[in-house]
Every structure is written in C-alpha cells, then in structure tokens.
Image (cartoon, rainbow, N blue to C red; front, side, top):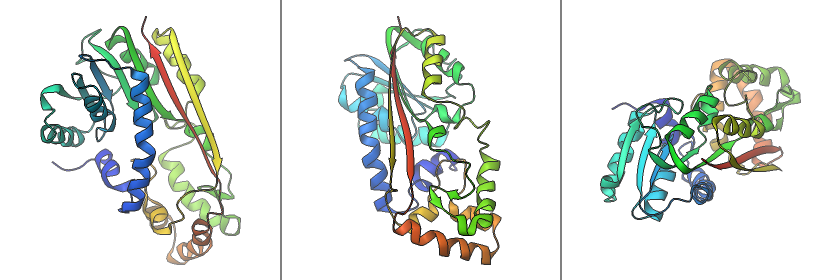
Length: 289
C-alpha cells in the first residue's frame, strides 16, 4: 500500500532523514506519552481508544503499561493502521488490539459508552469540527470514563510579522522571505486553518459543551533560543504533514539567485541559534459524569 501524507510525515518528513533529529523528537514525545497516559488512568481490564494513533506511541504505551488492557487504534491513515497491526503482531499483543479507520469527528463505528478512556496527541490541530470531536469522545466513553489529550497551541507561536521567518530576523532579505511565507500562508491561512483557530480556553469550552463536568487543563509556555542548529535538518524538515519543507518552499517560490541570498542570510542565524522559539502546549483531562 502506498504511503499517504500522514504516514510520510510521521515516519520520514518530520525527521528530515536525520537520526539525531529523530532521536530528539522521540526524546520529546516519550514524556508527552507518559503524561497523557497518567491522566487517562487506565486500569487492568479496561479499554482505551487512541484517536489519531499515528505510529502507535500512546497505544503501545498503554498496552505495555497495563498488561490486561484492550486498545483500539483509530486513525485516518490505513497505512499507519497496517503498520501498527504488524507491530502488534510482532510484539505478541494483537489479541488485545482493534484497528479502526475513522476521523476523530466521526466515531460512529463505536457504540455509545463502549470505552473506558480516550487519548489523543496533536489531533485537534487537523480537525475543523472540534466541538464534534469532543461530542464523539463523550458519547463513546462509559460513565466515569476519562479523556486525556495533548495539543499544541500553535496560535501562540504564530507570527505574521514580515521581518521574521520561523523565529529568525530576515529583515535584510524581507521581500524574498515574504515569497516563502506566502507559500505557507496559502496552505494554512492563519485566520481559518484548524491548526491556528483555537487556544486552551476553547478546549475547555469544547469539553464543557460536550458534557464533561470534571475538567483539568495544564498550559506550558516557553520562549527560548531555538534548539538544534543543524542547517540541513532545518532545511529539510516539514513542520506538519500539510506543508512543504523550507527547501521545497524555496524551490516553489524563489529563483535560484533569491534562494542563494536567503540561505546566505538565514543559515548563519540557524547554525548560531540566533532566533526565538515560542511554543505553547496544553494537556487537558476530563471525566464523564
């Protein structure tokens, strides 16, 4: 089966083919997984639904940490579900797994009150109908079932300022940088794209409207120098499945001379970490009454 944009990004494009970059991503994600599972409070014999399971980071963590748990792997990528199924068989866990091809806002294949916990990681950023997603989570949860999600709040770190690109000052090549920025804005408009149309307060509202009454939210904000400093990784890493790498965007928008000028300015800034990285992430966990 051919890969789709989701599997291509999860398995390749977010790492830029760089093993060191891949390890950095995993080092970041393992604590996220552990925190999401801690808030899910999965007990022996219970069933967890992992929505947008991707490569199975949370789902396999649940299978490993609670030995009699059952896990439903749910995703919109048939390729990723097949990969997860192969891995589950190799790990000897297949009899504890189900696999569901479904979007987060339509879990109609599952009965009402059929699971004990629902988890997600970076799923709502790809879904426009966020209230419908929360409604579906509430519907499939049993009484006292738990919801535990992780979402980046991309609105916080997003910048429309013409003198910056990915947190670096590009004033001396501003007109060239704007051509690159336009490529990304055309694909993910800041005023309508689901990656940018919500913040942590909206998450609470969605949960309340769905019917959850016990709701907790933790917000973590960081403003730091950029990590890494590896130009090739910076050039060839795609920030999410729906956008090109910087290298691809430059090829699309710039002449060779313009690309050379942008690289000549930007590369020393990246390698010396002379930029600003702004990030906000949220954990929300809730219980169905």
